[in-house]
Image: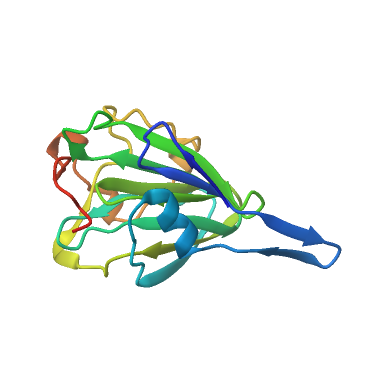
Length: 190
Protein backbone atom coordinates (compact mmCIF):
# COMPACT_ATOMS: atom_id res chain seq x y z
CA UNK A 1 0.00 0.00 0.00
CA UNK A 2 1.12 3.50 -0.80
CA UNK A 3 -0.05 6.38 1.39
CA UNK A 4 -0.02 9.91 -0.05
CA UNK A 5 -0.98 13.12 1.70
CA UNK A 6 -3.35 15.28 -0.37
CA UNK A 7 -3.51 19.08 -0.60
CA UNK A 8 -5.10 18.85 2.85
CA UNK A 9 -2.40 16.78 4.60
CA UNK A 10 -4.76 15.02 7.04
CA UNK A 11 -6.74 13.53 4.14
CA UNK A 12 -4.79 10.53 2.85
CA UNK A 13 -4.99 8.86 -0.56
CA UNK A 14 -4.30 5.13 -0.37
CA UNK A 15 -3.22 3.08 -3.38
CA UNK A 16 -3.31 -0.63 -2.58
CA UNK A 17 -1.17 -3.09 -4.48
CA UNK A 18 -3.30 -5.09 -6.90
CA UNK A 19 -2.08 -8.59 -7.78
CA UNK A 20 -3.65 -9.63 -11.07
CA UNK A 21 -3.38 -12.51 -13.51
CA UNK A 22 -5.59 -14.38 -15.98
CA UNK A 23 -7.85 -15.52 -13.14
CA UNK A 24 -8.63 -12.01 -11.91
CA UNK A 25 -7.06 -10.05 -9.06
CA UNK A 26 -6.36 -9.99 -5.33
CA UNK A 27 -5.99 -6.84 -3.23
CA UNK A 28 -5.63 -6.12 0.48
CA UNK A 29 -8.19 -3.37 1.05
CA UNK A 30 -7.29 -2.67 4.69
CA UNK A 31 -4.24 -3.15 6.90
CA UNK A 32 -4.58 -1.54 10.34
CA UNK A 33 -0.87 -1.94 11.08
CA UNK A 34 0.24 -0.09 7.92
CA UNK A 35 -2.36 2.67 8.23
CA UNK A 36 -1.60 3.25 11.90
CA UNK A 37 2.17 3.26 11.25
CA UNK A 38 1.65 5.97 8.61
CA UNK A 39 -0.76 8.04 10.74
CA UNK A 40 1.06 7.62 14.04
CA UNK A 41 -2.14 6.78 15.93
CA UNK A 42 -4.77 4.03 16.10
CA UNK A 43 -8.12 4.29 14.34
CA UNK A 44 -10.58 1.81 15.90
CA UNK A 45 -12.87 1.14 12.95
CA UNK A 46 -16.06 -0.49 14.25
CA UNK A 47 -18.49 -0.64 11.33
CA UNK A 48 -18.50 -1.22 7.57
CA UNK A 49 -21.16 0.39 5.36
CA UNK A 50 -22.08 -0.11 1.71
CA UNK A 51 -24.37 1.74 -0.67
CA UNK A 52 -25.57 1.17 -4.21
CA UNK A 53 -26.34 4.16 -6.42
CA UNK A 54 -26.87 5.13 -10.05
CA UNK A 55 -25.43 7.91 -12.20
CA UNK A 56 -25.85 11.38 -10.74
CA UNK A 57 -26.68 10.31 -7.20
CA UNK A 58 -25.00 12.78 -4.86
CA UNK A 59 -24.74 11.83 -1.20
CA UNK A 60 -23.46 14.56 1.10
CA UNK A 61 -21.94 16.61 2.44
CA UNK A 62 -22.35 14.71 5.75
CA UNK A 63 -20.62 14.51 9.13
CA UNK A 64 -21.30 13.83 12.80
CA UNK A 65 -20.40 16.09 15.70
CA UNK A 66 -18.50 14.92 18.81
CA UNK A 67 -18.79 12.76 20.76
CA UNK A 68 -19.92 10.70 17.75
CA UNK A 69 -17.61 12.20 15.12
CA UNK A 70 -16.46 9.69 12.51
CA UNK A 71 -13.30 8.94 10.62
CA UNK A 72 -14.06 7.31 7.27
CA UNK A 73 -12.03 5.06 5.00
CA UNK A 74 -13.91 5.08 1.68
CA UNK A 75 -13.59 3.09 -1.54
CA UNK A 76 -15.53 2.03 -4.62
CA UNK A 77 -16.08 -1.66 -5.30
CA UNK A 78 -17.77 -1.20 -8.69
CA UNK A 79 -18.23 1.95 -10.75
CA UNK A 80 -16.76 5.42 -10.24
CA UNK A 81 -17.36 8.43 -8.00
CA UNK A 82 -15.96 11.86 -7.38
CA UNK A 83 -15.29 11.76 -3.64
CA UNK A 84 -15.05 15.04 -1.70
CA UNK A 85 -13.80 15.89 1.80
CA UNK A 86 -14.28 19.44 3.19
CA UNK A 87 -12.22 20.70 6.14
CA UNK A 88 -14.64 22.01 8.78
CA UNK A 89 -12.07 22.40 11.58
CA UNK A 90 -12.24 26.08 12.58
CA UNK A 91 -8.70 27.38 13.00
CA UNK A 92 -7.20 24.88 10.53
CA UNK A 93 -4.98 26.38 7.82
CA UNK A 94 -7.19 24.57 5.29
CA UNK A 95 -10.55 25.44 6.90
CA UNK A 96 -13.21 25.58 4.17
CA UNK A 97 -10.97 23.92 1.57
CA UNK A 98 -11.76 20.59 -0.01
CA UNK A 99 -10.10 17.61 -1.66
CA UNK A 100 -11.82 15.90 -4.61
CA UNK A 101 -10.58 12.52 -5.86
CA UNK A 102 -11.93 10.04 -8.41
CA UNK A 103 -12.31 6.62 -6.83
CA UNK A 104 -13.27 3.62 -8.92
CA UNK A 105 -13.51 -0.13 -8.98
CA UNK A 106 -10.68 -0.04 -11.52
CA UNK A 107 -8.16 2.15 -9.70
CA UNK A 108 -8.96 0.62 -6.26
CA UNK A 109 -7.93 3.89 -4.59
CA UNK A 110 -9.20 4.73 -1.13
CA UNK A 111 -9.52 7.97 0.78
CA UNK A 112 -8.90 8.31 4.51
CA UNK A 113 -11.06 11.15 5.84
CA UNK A 114 -10.43 12.04 9.49
CA UNK A 115 -12.84 13.46 12.01
CA UNK A 116 -13.46 17.16 11.41
CA UNK A 117 -14.37 16.81 7.73
CA UNK A 118 -17.66 16.81 5.86
CA UNK A 119 -17.84 14.08 3.22
CA UNK A 120 -19.81 13.48 0.05
CA UNK A 121 -19.64 11.81 -3.32
CA UNK A 122 -21.35 11.85 -6.69
CA UNK A 123 -21.67 8.80 -8.95
CA UNK A 124 -19.99 9.23 -12.35
CA UNK A 125 -20.71 5.74 -13.73
CA UNK A 126 -23.99 4.08 -14.68
CA UNK A 127 -24.06 2.29 -11.31
CA UNK A 128 -21.79 2.21 -8.29
CA UNK A 129 -21.17 0.16 -5.18
CA UNK A 130 -19.54 2.34 -2.53
CA UNK A 131 -18.07 0.95 0.71
CA UNK A 132 -16.58 2.58 3.78
CA UNK A 133 -15.40 1.97 7.31
CA UNK A 134 -16.23 4.27 10.24
CA UNK A 135 -14.72 4.50 13.71
CA UNK A 136 -17.90 5.54 15.52
CA UNK A 137 -21.53 4.48 15.31
CA UNK A 138 -24.18 6.67 13.71
CA UNK A 139 -26.01 8.97 16.12
CA UNK A 140 -28.98 10.93 14.70
CA UNK A 141 -28.61 13.71 17.29
CA UNK A 142 -25.05 14.41 16.07
CA UNK A 143 -25.88 14.11 12.36
CA UNK A 144 -25.10 17.25 10.36
CA UNK A 145 -24.62 18.35 6.77
CA UNK A 146 -23.62 21.18 4.49
CA UNK A 147 -25.19 22.23 1.18
CA UNK A 148 -23.34 20.44 -1.61
CA UNK A 149 -23.74 23.44 -3.93
CA UNK A 150 -22.64 26.21 -1.56
CA UNK A 151 -20.77 28.76 -3.75
CA UNK A 152 -18.37 29.43 -0.87
CA UNK A 153 -17.03 25.87 -1.21
CA UNK A 154 -16.71 26.05 -5.01
CA UNK A 155 -16.89 22.28 -5.52
CA UNK A 156 -17.02 21.11 -9.14
CA UNK A 157 -19.13 17.97 -8.89
CA UNK A 158 -18.54 17.24 -12.62
CA UNK A 159 -22.17 16.10 -13.15
CA UNK A 160 -24.58 18.73 -14.48
CA UNK A 161 -26.94 20.00 -11.77
CA UNK A 162 -29.97 18.90 -13.81
CA UNK A 163 -28.69 15.29 -13.68
CA UNK A 164 -28.12 15.17 -9.92
CA UNK A 165 -30.25 12.93 -7.73
CA UNK A 166 -30.46 14.05 -4.09
CA UNK A 167 -32.27 12.89 -0.99
CA UNK A 168 -34.82 15.27 0.54
CA UNK A 169 -32.38 15.70 3.45
CA UNK A 170 -29.55 16.79 1.15
CA UNK A 171 -31.67 19.43 -0.59
CA UNK A 172 -32.16 21.22 2.76
CA UNK A 173 -28.64 21.29 4.24
CA UNK A 174 -27.35 24.64 5.58
CA UNK A 175 -24.67 26.73 3.92
CA UNK A 176 -21.08 26.33 5.07
CA UNK A 177 -21.26 29.68 6.92
CA UNK A 178 -24.17 28.34 8.99
CA UNK A 179 -22.74 24.88 9.68
CA UNK A 180 -21.57 23.48 13.00
CA UNK A 181 -17.77 23.26 12.99
CA UNK A 182 -15.07 21.35 14.81
CA UNK A 183 -12.30 23.08 16.77
CA UNK A 184 -8.91 22.51 15.12
CA UNK A 185 -7.10 22.82 18.45
CA UNK A 186 -9.01 19.90 20.00
CA UNK A 187 -7.63 16.37 19.74
CA UNK A 188 -10.52 14.52 18.10
CA UNK A 189 -8.93 11.11 18.81
CA UNK A 190 -8.94 11.18 22.61
